[in-house]
Each structure stands twice: as structure tokens, then as C-alpha cells.
Length: 339
Image (tube, rainbow, N blue to C red; front, side, top):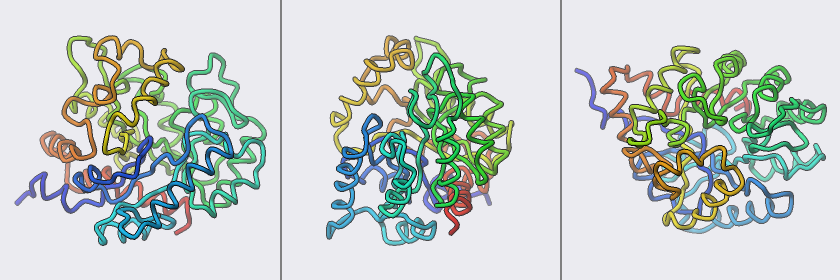
């Protein structure tokens, strides 16, 4: 007898490839049965000192006696967090600005717990070009050296906000699987943040993963009379699966991990002011508040069971659902981290 969506979701090892920020509140993740999540622990526009301050805040949260968080340094820590009723914190960045042009800082931050680094956030840095740059200059010589050092140290390379040529250069430079932790298919919705079929195939060719996202502007079909919902997300998910197979697909919601959504209002305002081309059409249709940036039927980690219900309703096999919800990401992180 087939198991229900509720049973599948309850028993799955769910690992979210990206939460863009957090105030330390884990209640919605626990409600959604999330075992671990890659949280952006440094401001995306910050350099070395602000990054260290942000990470110090997280260290204090982890050390609190009643902390709902467990630091993930090895893949075994993810299952341990779930067993303890905690949420595993995978420390990640969405911009490598904090290392500047100093490779030795990679060793420092890995020792502090960072396990995932996105090369660049929309714009150009010492590594390469972001997806909103008018000219994609590709991976720099320093960027190639940084990827080789990340491979050596066991830090995952994330290409989510990275431009096309820079993505393909990074794939060629890496000896380990690379990740797109949170992006969808450009062939389904042509927006700057989504990835071409060529990039998706190249990432899968490394043994890596594409983390499909419930972020509204990347799922939306362009109809201003209807906000995006899980059916739009599933279109992207199934396109990627059809292209590279379910073994190369994961989940990266891009949710804010906060108890009070107003705490990320400044981030939502900044994305509109600094990157209007990425969100202005969507915001004109549905407003520019954080809740409407997500799917109408999956706007919080607590609503992730709706995603599992949608996949069951589409006839997905339980093994494939569990793979996408977390098992694939645990496997590939193990290959990158070496544990």
C-alpha cells in the first residue's frame, strides 16, 4: 500500500540548500521537518570584518544552552541534528568578498565552520562575474586558484547567482562536484537568476546538484493576474529532472529563516533598489513584501509538506521525493567535504 504524503514527509531527511538569512529562529524549520539548512551567515555585500561579526553572532547562538541549532561540519551531523530534534546549521556564504584576494582566508573560514561558498552575488568580484553584470568576463585566474583551494579544503562551490560563462569556467576548474543551491530553469522562465540547460547539464556532469527554488520571481510564468504556486515550481523541477535525472536535483528554497518577517524587510527593499531588473516586473504585479516573493501555497518552511503533497499528487515515486528533499544533497556534500 502506497504511503501518504504526510508519512513520506515525516520520515524524509529534509535538507534545504539555501536560507538567505536568519535571526536564529528555528520554529518554522522544525514545523516543516527540516533536518538541516545552508544558511547565509554573512551579508551578501559584506567584506572581511562584517562577515566575522556575523559569524560571531552565529557562534553565540550555537553555544546557547537551549539552542535549537547544531553546527554541521560533517554529513553525519545532519542525521544527528534530526535525531536530537534540532536543525543542522550548514554555514554558507552567497559572496566570496570576505576573502578579498587572499586564499589563506579560505582555511580560516573553513576552520570556523563555513562549508558552502557561492562565488559571487549578482555582481563582479575578484572571482568572476555575477548574473546581473552586463558583461560576463568569466572566471578570473584568482578564481581558478580559489576553486582549486576550495576543492582541497572541502568547501562546496555554489554557482547560484553566478553568470553563465563564469559558471561554465568554474565547472571546468573544479575537480569535485559543484552546486547550484537555489535556482530554476531558464528554459521554463527566462530571468537572469535562472540557469540555462547548458549550465544545468555542466553542473550535473561534475556529479553536482541543481537546487530547485520556491522563490516566486524564478517560478512565475509571467501572468500578472496569477501569483506563482507549486504547480509552477513543479514545472521547473520536472524540466531539470528530465534534463539531467533525479539524482542531480535537490531543494533550495531561498526562504528567510526568521520568526518575524519584518526583520528582512530591509533586504527585500535592497534587492529592489540595487537589482531592480531581477524583481521589478514581479513586484509590480504582486507587491514588494517578503511573503509575496514566495509561492502562494508554499511561502514558509512550515508549509513544505505542501510540496511533498504536490509531488505525490503528480505521481512521483517515494524514493525520488526523498532524494530531492535531502538525500541527494547529503550524498553530494559528503563527496565534496570528504566525509
